[in-house]
Length: 386
Image (cartoon, rainbow, N blue to C red):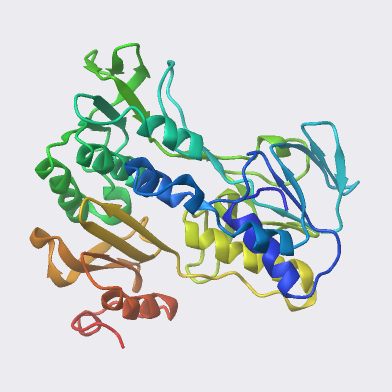
Protein backbone atom coordinates (compact mmCIF):
# COMPACT_ATOMS: atom_id res chain seq x y z
CA UNK A 1 0.00 0.00 0.00
CA UNK A 2 1.32 3.42 -0.92
CA UNK A 3 -0.40 5.90 1.37
CA UNK A 4 -0.60 5.46 5.15
CA UNK A 5 -3.84 7.18 6.04
CA UNK A 6 -7.42 5.89 6.33
CA UNK A 7 -7.61 4.12 2.96
CA UNK A 8 -4.18 2.49 3.17
CA UNK A 9 -4.71 1.30 6.73
CA UNK A 10 -8.18 -0.07 5.93
CA UNK A 11 -6.69 -1.99 3.01
CA UNK A 12 -3.94 -3.47 5.19
CA UNK A 13 -6.36 -4.53 7.90
CA UNK A 14 -8.69 -6.11 5.35
CA UNK A 15 -5.91 -8.10 3.73
CA UNK A 16 -4.93 -9.55 7.10
CA UNK A 17 -8.53 -10.19 8.07
CA UNK A 18 -9.15 -12.00 4.78
CA UNK A 19 -6.23 -14.33 5.42
CA UNK A 20 -3.27 -12.79 3.61
CA UNK A 21 -0.17 -13.66 5.66
CA UNK A 22 2.60 -12.55 3.31
CA UNK A 23 4.73 -9.41 3.42
CA UNK A 24 2.59 -6.31 3.73
CA UNK A 25 4.35 -2.99 3.20
CA UNK A 26 2.72 0.33 4.09
CA UNK A 27 4.45 3.42 2.70
CA UNK A 28 3.64 6.92 3.97
CA UNK A 29 5.29 10.26 3.35
CA UNK A 30 4.48 11.56 6.85
CA UNK A 31 6.57 10.27 9.77
CA UNK A 32 3.50 9.65 11.94
CA UNK A 33 1.53 6.42 12.17
CA UNK A 34 -1.90 6.56 10.43
CA UNK A 35 -4.12 9.24 11.97
CA UNK A 36 -7.54 10.73 11.40
CA UNK A 37 -7.83 13.99 9.44
CA UNK A 38 -11.40 15.33 9.88
CA UNK A 39 -10.74 16.45 13.50
CA UNK A 40 -7.87 18.69 12.32
CA UNK A 41 -10.27 21.49 11.38
CA UNK A 42 -12.45 20.94 14.44
CA UNK A 43 -11.25 19.30 17.68
CA UNK A 44 -7.53 19.79 17.08
CA UNK A 45 -7.82 23.37 15.83
CA UNK A 46 -10.04 24.28 18.78
CA UNK A 47 -7.74 22.62 21.30
CA UNK A 48 -10.49 20.24 22.50
CA UNK A 49 -8.36 17.19 21.63
CA UNK A 50 -4.75 16.37 22.25
CA UNK A 51 -2.92 15.11 19.13
CA UNK A 52 -2.69 11.58 20.53
CA UNK A 53 -6.44 11.12 20.03
CA UNK A 54 -6.01 11.25 16.26
CA UNK A 55 -4.36 7.84 16.02
CA UNK A 56 -6.50 5.54 13.88
CA UNK A 57 -5.35 2.49 15.84
CA UNK A 58 -3.54 1.93 19.14
CA UNK A 59 0.14 1.09 18.71
CA UNK A 60 -0.47 -2.52 19.79
CA UNK A 61 -3.18 -3.05 17.17
CA UNK A 62 -0.94 -1.59 14.48
CA UNK A 63 1.95 -3.82 15.53
CA UNK A 64 -0.32 -6.88 15.45
CA UNK A 65 -0.78 -6.40 11.70
CA UNK A 66 2.86 -7.30 11.13
CA UNK A 67 3.41 -4.48 8.66
CA UNK A 68 6.64 -3.45 7.00
CA UNK A 69 6.10 0.22 7.85
CA UNK A 70 7.93 2.75 5.69
CA UNK A 71 6.93 6.08 7.24
CA UNK A 72 8.44 9.46 6.46
CA UNK A 73 9.45 8.43 2.94
CA UNK A 74 7.50 9.22 -0.21
CA UNK A 75 7.00 7.04 -3.26
CA UNK A 76 8.48 8.73 -6.31
CA UNK A 77 8.00 6.24 -9.13
CA UNK A 78 6.09 3.18 -10.33
CA UNK A 79 7.22 0.60 -12.89
CA UNK A 80 4.26 -1.52 -13.95
CA UNK A 81 6.26 -3.94 -16.08
CA UNK A 82 8.86 -4.56 -13.37
CA UNK A 83 6.22 -4.48 -10.60
CA UNK A 84 8.24 -2.13 -8.45
CA UNK A 85 7.71 1.09 -6.50
CA UNK A 86 10.64 3.48 -6.11
CA UNK A 87 10.98 5.44 -2.88
CA UNK A 88 12.53 8.86 -2.26
CA UNK A 89 15.35 7.30 -0.24
CA UNK A 90 16.47 5.34 -3.31
CA UNK A 91 15.04 1.96 -2.31
CA UNK A 92 12.97 -0.07 -4.78
CA UNK A 93 10.14 -2.21 -3.45
CA UNK A 94 8.81 -5.16 -5.49
CA UNK A 95 5.11 -6.02 -5.35
CA UNK A 96 2.70 -8.76 -6.39
CA UNK A 97 -0.28 -6.51 -5.70
CA UNK A 98 -0.42 -2.75 -5.19
CA UNK A 99 -2.98 -0.37 -3.68
CA UNK A 100 -2.51 3.34 -4.33
CA UNK A 101 -3.88 5.52 -1.54
CA UNK A 102 -1.73 8.64 -1.74
CA UNK A 103 -4.57 11.07 -1.05
CA UNK A 104 -4.54 14.74 -1.92
CA UNK A 105 -2.67 17.93 -1.09
CA UNK A 106 -4.07 21.47 -0.66
CA UNK A 107 -4.27 23.87 -3.54
CA UNK A 108 -2.25 27.01 -2.88
CA UNK A 109 -2.21 30.64 -3.93
CA UNK A 110 0.73 32.74 -5.11
CA UNK A 111 2.62 34.40 -2.28
CA UNK A 112 4.24 33.26 0.93
CA UNK A 113 3.17 32.74 4.50
CA UNK A 114 -0.33 31.30 4.15
CA UNK A 115 -1.52 28.32 6.16
CA UNK A 116 -3.14 25.21 4.73
CA UNK A 117 -4.92 22.51 6.72
CA UNK A 118 -4.01 18.96 5.78
CA UNK A 119 -1.58 17.61 8.36
CA UNK A 120 -1.35 17.59 12.14
CA UNK A 121 1.51 20.09 11.98
CA UNK A 122 -0.66 22.40 9.85
CA UNK A 123 -3.43 22.36 12.46
CA UNK A 124 -1.15 22.84 15.46
CA UNK A 125 0.71 25.72 13.82
CA UNK A 126 -2.51 27.56 12.99
CA UNK A 127 -4.04 26.83 16.40
CA UNK A 128 -1.18 28.60 18.15
CA UNK A 129 -1.94 31.77 16.21
CA UNK A 130 -5.66 32.09 16.89
CA UNK A 131 -7.49 33.82 19.71
CA UNK A 132 -8.71 37.23 20.92
CA UNK A 133 -7.04 40.15 19.22
CA UNK A 134 -5.97 38.08 16.21
CA UNK A 135 -7.25 38.53 12.66
CA UNK A 136 -7.69 35.55 10.34
CA UNK A 137 -8.60 35.60 6.65
CA UNK A 138 -9.96 32.28 5.36
CA UNK A 139 -9.88 31.96 1.58
CA UNK A 140 -12.60 29.57 0.47
CA UNK A 141 -15.95 28.96 2.16
CA UNK A 142 -16.24 25.26 1.40
CA UNK A 143 -16.67 22.82 4.26
CA UNK A 144 -13.03 22.92 5.36
CA UNK A 145 -12.81 26.71 5.30
CA UNK A 146 -16.19 27.07 6.98
CA UNK A 147 -15.25 24.66 9.78
CA UNK A 148 -11.98 26.48 10.42
CA UNK A 149 -13.72 29.84 10.37
CA UNK A 150 -16.27 28.60 12.91
CA UNK A 151 -13.58 27.31 15.26
CA UNK A 152 -11.49 30.48 14.96
CA UNK A 153 -14.50 32.67 15.64
CA UNK A 154 -15.44 30.68 18.76
CA UNK A 155 -11.85 31.18 19.96
CA UNK A 156 -12.38 34.93 19.77
CA UNK A 157 -10.52 35.49 16.51
CA UNK A 158 -11.69 38.20 14.13
CA UNK A 159 -12.52 36.23 10.97
CA UNK A 160 -12.97 37.31 7.37
CA UNK A 161 -14.24 34.52 5.10
CA UNK A 162 -13.70 35.13 1.38
CA UNK A 163 -15.56 33.16 -1.29
CA UNK A 164 -15.46 33.79 -5.06
CA UNK A 165 -18.90 32.28 -5.72
CA UNK A 166 -22.11 34.24 -5.15
CA UNK A 167 -23.30 31.64 -2.60
CA UNK A 168 -20.90 29.34 -0.70
CA UNK A 169 -21.29 25.63 -1.47
CA UNK A 170 -24.21 26.22 -3.85
CA UNK A 171 -22.63 23.88 -6.42
CA UNK A 172 -22.73 21.06 -3.89
CA UNK A 173 -25.71 21.61 -1.60
CA UNK A 174 -27.86 24.11 -3.50
CA UNK A 175 -28.29 27.86 -3.18
CA UNK A 176 -30.92 27.77 -0.41
CA UNK A 177 -28.88 25.53 1.85
CA UNK A 178 -25.75 27.52 1.01
CA UNK A 179 -27.45 30.75 2.05
CA UNK A 180 -28.59 29.15 5.31
CA UNK A 181 -25.03 28.10 6.14
CA UNK A 182 -23.85 31.62 5.26
CA UNK A 183 -26.32 33.20 7.67
CA UNK A 184 -24.93 31.09 10.50
CA UNK A 185 -21.48 32.61 9.95
CA UNK A 186 -22.86 36.13 9.71
CA UNK A 187 -24.80 35.63 12.95
CA UNK A 188 -21.57 34.60 14.67
CA UNK A 189 -19.82 37.78 13.59
CA UNK A 190 -17.82 36.46 10.65
CA UNK A 191 -17.17 39.00 7.89
CA UNK A 192 -18.34 36.81 5.00
CA UNK A 193 -17.68 38.29 1.57
CA UNK A 194 -19.00 36.45 -1.48
CA UNK A 195 -17.88 37.25 -5.01
CA UNK A 196 -14.42 38.00 -3.61
CA UNK A 197 -11.69 36.42 -5.72
CA UNK A 198 -8.23 36.32 -4.12
CA UNK A 199 -5.24 36.60 -6.46
CA UNK A 200 -2.37 36.27 -4.01
CA UNK A 201 -1.21 36.20 -0.42
CA UNK A 202 0.69 39.31 0.71
CA UNK A 203 2.70 40.28 3.79
CA UNK A 204 -0.34 42.13 5.12
CA UNK A 205 -3.09 39.66 4.20
CA UNK A 206 -4.49 38.90 0.75
CA UNK A 207 -4.94 40.80 -2.49
CA UNK A 208 -8.33 40.63 -4.20
CA UNK A 209 -8.87 40.73 -7.95
CA UNK A 210 -10.52 44.12 -7.39
CA UNK A 211 -7.19 45.49 -6.12
CA UNK A 212 -8.30 45.65 -2.48
CA UNK A 213 -6.02 44.29 0.22
CA UNK A 214 -7.80 42.48 3.05
CA UNK A 215 -5.50 42.75 6.05
CA UNK A 216 -4.91 39.87 8.45
CA UNK A 217 -2.41 38.48 10.91
CA UNK A 218 -2.86 34.99 9.47
CA UNK A 219 -4.24 33.61 6.21
CA UNK A 220 -5.72 30.13 5.73
CA UNK A 221 -6.10 28.96 2.13
CA UNK A 222 -8.89 26.38 1.78
CA UNK A 223 -9.62 26.35 -1.94
CA UNK A 224 -9.72 22.62 -2.56
CA UNK A 225 -7.22 19.86 -3.17
CA UNK A 226 -5.15 18.20 -5.86
CA UNK A 227 -4.75 14.40 -6.05
CA UNK A 228 -1.20 13.20 -5.42
CA UNK A 229 -0.50 11.56 -8.77
CA UNK A 230 2.63 13.31 -10.06
CA UNK A 231 4.82 10.44 -8.90
CA UNK A 232 2.93 8.22 -11.34
CA UNK A 233 4.03 10.20 -14.42
CA UNK A 234 5.40 7.79 -17.01
CA UNK A 235 4.06 4.75 -15.17
CA UNK A 236 1.49 3.92 -17.82
CA UNK A 237 -1.46 4.41 -15.49
CA UNK A 238 -4.29 6.63 -16.68
CA UNK A 239 -4.41 9.78 -14.57
CA UNK A 240 -7.09 12.46 -14.85
CA UNK A 241 -8.03 14.33 -11.68
CA UNK A 242 -6.98 11.22 -9.81
CA UNK A 243 -5.98 7.66 -10.64
CA UNK A 244 -8.60 6.46 -13.12
CA UNK A 245 -10.15 3.12 -12.18
CA UNK A 246 -12.99 0.89 -13.27
CA UNK A 247 -16.00 0.02 -11.12
CA UNK A 248 -13.87 -2.41 -9.13
CA UNK A 249 -11.25 0.20 -8.23
CA UNK A 250 -8.71 -1.42 -10.57
CA UNK A 251 -6.31 0.91 -12.39
CA UNK A 252 -4.15 -1.77 -14.02
CA UNK A 253 -3.57 -5.47 -13.56
CA UNK A 254 -3.05 -6.11 -9.81
CA UNK A 255 -3.05 -2.35 -9.16
CA UNK A 256 -5.97 -0.71 -7.36
CA UNK A 257 -6.56 2.79 -6.04
CA UNK A 258 -8.55 3.86 -3.01
CA UNK A 259 -9.53 6.98 -1.12
CA UNK A 260 -9.20 10.62 -2.15
CA UNK A 261 -6.78 9.89 -5.00
CA UNK A 262 -9.05 7.39 -6.78
CA UNK A 263 -11.39 8.35 -9.60
CA UNK A 264 -13.60 5.38 -10.28
CA UNK A 265 -16.85 4.54 -12.05
CA UNK A 266 -19.63 4.25 -9.49
CA UNK A 267 -22.35 2.10 -11.09
CA UNK A 268 -24.92 3.21 -8.52
CA UNK A 269 -24.90 6.71 -10.01
CA UNK A 270 -23.70 5.79 -13.50
CA UNK A 271 -20.81 8.23 -13.44
CA UNK A 272 -17.13 8.58 -12.64
CA UNK A 273 -16.37 10.31 -9.36
CA UNK A 274 -13.60 11.14 -6.94
CA UNK A 275 -14.75 11.53 -3.34
CA UNK A 276 -12.75 13.29 -0.62
CA UNK A 277 -14.63 11.94 2.39
CA UNK A 278 -13.27 10.02 5.35
CA UNK A 279 -15.92 7.27 5.23
CA UNK A 280 -15.39 6.68 1.52
CA UNK A 281 -11.64 6.32 2.02
CA UNK A 282 -12.01 3.50 4.53
CA UNK A 283 -14.75 1.73 2.56
CA UNK A 284 -12.81 1.92 -0.69
CA UNK A 285 -9.63 0.70 0.98
CA UNK A 286 -11.49 -2.39 2.18
CA UNK A 287 -13.11 -2.96 -1.23
CA UNK A 288 -9.79 -2.60 -3.07
CA UNK A 289 -8.12 -5.10 -0.76
CA UNK A 290 -10.86 -7.70 -1.22
CA UNK A 291 -10.84 -7.32 -5.00
CA UNK A 292 -7.06 -7.52 -5.15
CA UNK A 293 -7.00 -10.64 -3.02
CA UNK A 294 -9.90 -12.35 -4.84
CA UNK A 295 -9.88 -11.11 -8.46
CA UNK A 296 -12.15 -13.93 -9.60
CA UNK A 297 -14.84 -12.70 -7.19
CA UNK A 298 -14.47 -8.93 -7.71
CA UNK A 299 -17.43 -6.82 -6.68
CA UNK A 300 -18.15 -3.32 -8.00
CA UNK A 301 -17.56 -0.54 -5.50
CA UNK A 302 -20.96 1.18 -5.52
CA UNK A 303 -21.33 3.07 -2.24
CA UNK A 304 -23.69 5.81 -1.16
CA UNK A 305 -21.13 8.49 -0.22
CA UNK A 306 -21.47 10.03 3.24
CA UNK A 307 -19.98 13.14 4.79
CA UNK A 308 -20.50 15.33 7.82
CA UNK A 309 -19.47 18.78 8.98
CA UNK A 310 -19.58 20.56 12.34
CA UNK A 311 -19.99 24.34 12.29
CA UNK A 312 -20.82 26.19 15.51
CA UNK A 313 -23.74 24.26 16.98
CA UNK A 314 -24.80 22.80 13.62
CA UNK A 315 -24.26 19.17 12.68
CA UNK A 316 -24.45 18.71 8.91
CA UNK A 317 -24.85 15.16 7.55
CA UNK A 318 -25.31 14.10 3.94
CA UNK A 319 -25.72 10.93 1.92
CA UNK A 320 -25.43 10.54 -1.82
CA UNK A 321 -23.86 12.39 -4.71
CA UNK A 322 -25.19 15.94 -4.47
CA UNK A 323 -23.06 17.65 -7.11
CA UNK A 324 -24.82 18.37 -10.37
CA UNK A 325 -28.27 17.94 -8.85
CA UNK A 326 -31.34 19.31 -10.64
CA UNK A 327 -33.65 20.05 -7.72
CA UNK A 328 -33.71 20.32 -3.91
CA UNK A 329 -36.77 19.91 -1.69
CA UNK A 330 -36.98 20.45 2.06
CA UNK A 331 -39.05 17.50 3.31
CA UNK A 332 -38.80 18.00 7.07
CA UNK A 333 -38.11 20.92 9.38
CA UNK A 334 -37.33 24.50 8.46
CA UNK A 335 -34.28 26.11 6.86
CA UNK A 336 -34.75 29.29 8.90
CA UNK A 337 -34.51 27.29 12.12
CA UNK A 338 -31.41 25.43 10.88
CA UNK A 339 -33.13 22.14 11.58
CA UNK A 340 -34.25 20.32 8.44
CA UNK A 341 -33.83 17.48 5.94
CA UNK A 342 -33.37 18.35 2.26
CA UNK A 343 -33.63 15.76 -0.54
CA UNK A 344 -31.86 16.09 -3.91
CA UNK A 345 -32.98 15.04 -7.38
CA UNK A 346 -30.72 14.25 -10.32
CA UNK A 347 -32.62 13.23 -13.42
CA UNK A 348 -35.58 11.13 -12.30
CA UNK A 349 -34.06 9.67 -9.16
CA UNK A 350 -33.34 10.63 -5.56
CA UNK A 351 -29.59 11.25 -5.60
CA UNK A 352 -28.92 12.54 -2.11
CA UNK A 353 -30.16 13.91 1.19
CA UNK A 354 -28.73 16.43 3.64
CA UNK A 355 -29.73 17.12 7.22
CA UNK A 356 -28.85 19.94 9.59
CA UNK A 357 -29.59 19.82 13.30
CA UNK A 358 -31.40 16.48 13.06
CA UNK A 359 -30.88 13.11 14.71
CA UNK A 360 -29.09 10.58 12.45
CA UNK A 361 -32.27 8.50 12.09
CA UNK A 362 -33.97 11.43 10.32
CA UNK A 363 -31.77 10.92 7.27
CA UNK A 364 -30.99 7.20 7.31
CA UNK A 365 -34.16 6.28 5.45
CA UNK A 366 -33.15 8.60 2.64
CA UNK A 367 -29.83 6.80 2.38
CA UNK A 368 -31.78 3.68 1.47
CA UNK A 369 -33.76 5.64 -1.11
CA UNK A 370 -30.50 6.72 -2.73
CA UNK A 371 -29.06 3.19 -2.57
CA UNK A 372 -32.10 1.68 -4.32
CA UNK A 373 -32.31 4.41 -6.97
CA UNK A 374 -35.76 5.51 -5.80
CA UNK A 375 -37.68 7.56 -8.32
CA UNK A 376 -38.43 11.18 -7.51
CA UNK A 377 -42.13 11.97 -7.27
CA UNK A 378 -44.40 13.94 -4.98
CA UNK A 379 -45.60 10.91 -3.04
CA UNK A 380 -42.06 9.77 -2.30
CA UNK A 381 -41.28 13.13 -0.69
CA UNK A 382 -44.23 13.23 1.70
CA UNK A 383 -42.64 10.98 4.30
CA UNK A 384 -39.22 9.64 5.19
CA UNK A 385 -38.67 6.23 3.57
CA UNK A 386 -38.76 3.34 6.05
